[in-house]
Image (cartoon, rainbow over all chains, first blue to last red; front, top):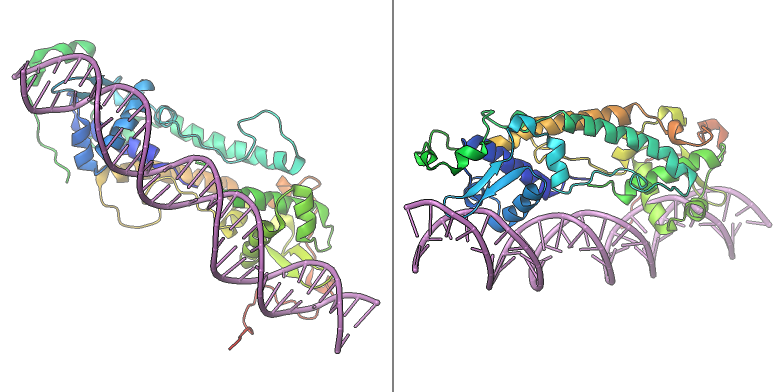
Length: 159
Length: 159
DNA sequence: CATAATCTTGACTGTAAAAATAGGGTATGA
DNA sequence: TCATACCCTATTTTTACAGTCAAGATTATG
């Protein structure tokens, strides 16, 4: 039992995005280089994150991805959900009917386990798993403004 | 992310064994019939459970498997461990060293998750996931076999 | 002792999901 | 209009899993 790479990579990518993009769009290729994850693969992840309303994209040159909200308002649970990871322990946690008895006995145990995981994931936000605690969230207005381009590209370099 | 069938079947098998064998050895073929799990496959599971000191085997005619201890003294965590299920969320929960930073940030989260799961599994015993709460545990004396070395594999050498 | 019942082990295989790649399309700033 | 970077989908590669089979060892019982 292991979390899929989709989820692990996705979380790493978001963490990277939070700490690197100080309000500016971050490109997939930058994240790819820093995190050593295939760019094509990352694009698939970001497509899911975009559909899940975790990130927003800016197309064209100097484009990239931004969080839709401040990192402190995005829970890990949301991200996991957006990435399509389903955490299943017992057999009948998804379906209503349950055929045999011993089976159902255990399902109560698994339910307890799942609840406790969910509680943690719901109460942890993105900024808590980011280095600087910075956010690459940016309001709609700011993004359209050309003034932003005067950039700080800078300071933090993780190799 | 899903528990392997090894663990799910294994737990069902043990649950069956607890409720069916009232002190007497339970055969794999009986469990196979009742739980609708391939006997060959079940034998693999029981081999693991025996190595993990969860069950003990009685060989020969009228043989079968027994718990090594009362069901109330065997935790689900032990069983999961014996079956070889490793519950891993982050990447570096097994190894000490950790190469990059964002990675490590998330590992604290995954550590918290894992701890909470472990707590539940450690505090749940087999009898809690069994129907009648019966135990097929049997004391050493009650079994008539003179040579019941539970889990000692030595003495086997073919040149 | 012979036989049957059962455990024990290891190798083997097909399948399905996960992981990763590839390539062409669309928007946009300089 | 060109380079950049997102966008989409199909395809391939890889790996882990579920399950089978067969031969052998051990022991109870008639």
